[in-house]
Image (cartoon, rainbow, N blue to C red; front, side, top):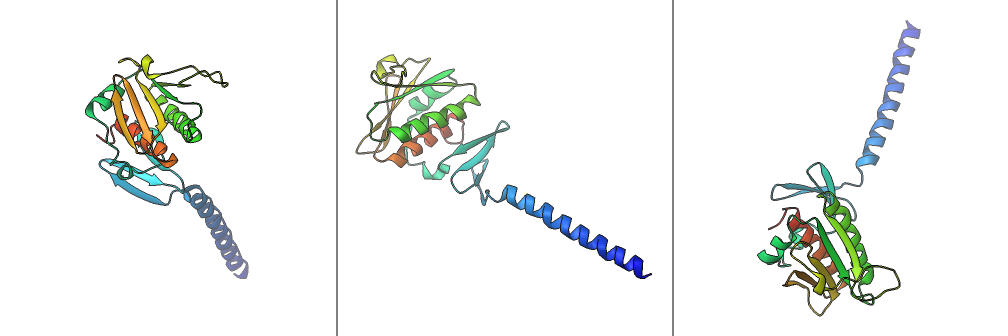
Length: 190
């Protein structure tokens, strides 16, 4: 009888240890996702540095929650130009003071838009040492619009012919504009 009691206690200890290990692993996996919020019909989860939502079984990341970029206006014409395009070109000046953030925005837009089979071609407005293509607003067409990121004393998005000029007054606004444009393309925001 004493042996049976020991074996029940031993089984309980083993079960308890396995439970602790499994719950620790599950906790570690989901520890980065701390908050969950809804915006319209979309559920967003937040990690320490990013916002995530799933569209068409694709997990997409953003730097800002939609309500944080609502004040950046996009005209109806700008939204229309961006929709259903096989390619969107993104450009900037090589010596722009926000060039690192612009490069990050270009890269992240390329990853996000590839889920919609939209190719993003990055370049600069002039000859450059990076062997990147020269892309200017003069190259913009209805089939291939251009987004031209640049620093400015204000943050706004305007449209000139088929060239979307994304002006930012600080480096964070580059990423805010990027998210605002992506939210529009993915139908999360109007």
